Length: 111
Length: 113
Image 1 (cartoon, rainbow over the protein chains, first blue to last red):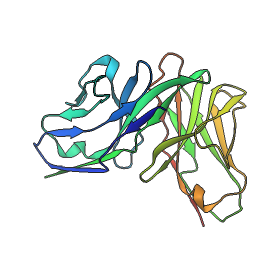
Image 2 (tube, chains in turn cyan, blue):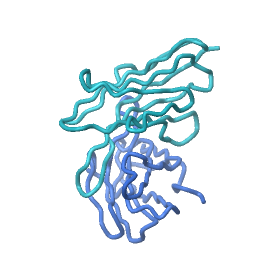
Image 3 (tube, rainbow over the protein chains, first blue to last red):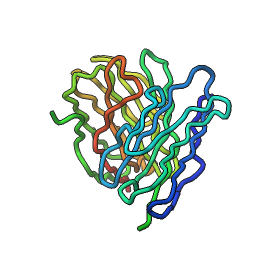
Image 4 (cartoon, helix red, strand yellow):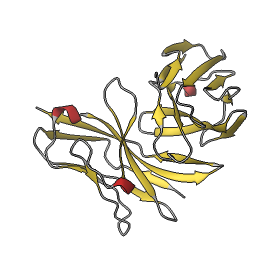
């Protein structure tokens, strides 16, 4: 069964510290993975996707098929990074592509 | 360009009451989705639509019905609300080919007492 696991409900770091938000997945096939972010009182929005291999707001994520992981990393956390982060897996079925979300990790960056 | 909008923003219902949540998008997207967001559960897909006049069940469809009479609108109905349906409901849309990039609405916070 397809599944996305985010083991940490809350990750608290100090400003300037490195951040790693963990995401593991189970999927039989070639996965497409995404990170979505929800800032306080804002709507959920796409942060980055693995296929683009991009860096957004200093965040990067590398797909590791051997470890079935897609961890989100940032070398130096900023207070404005505080938000809820969701890892998501794209799955095709029923004539469309659906997203399977993890349970989310709340990142709190302390001053 | 408003993107994805949802009506209402907040609602309190009593058990057994009915209501309809409205989602509208002005991006001409073919695909639309309804999710619920619960603490510790992430986002779970309720129903989705691949085009005007078509709907399909998602992961947690029980107790909900949907309709997509117009391409830009996707309605979520609760015929007889239950406390277990207390949640934040999000609508999302995307176009063919964008797949993983879904555009979300601001959410509707529903409390059923």
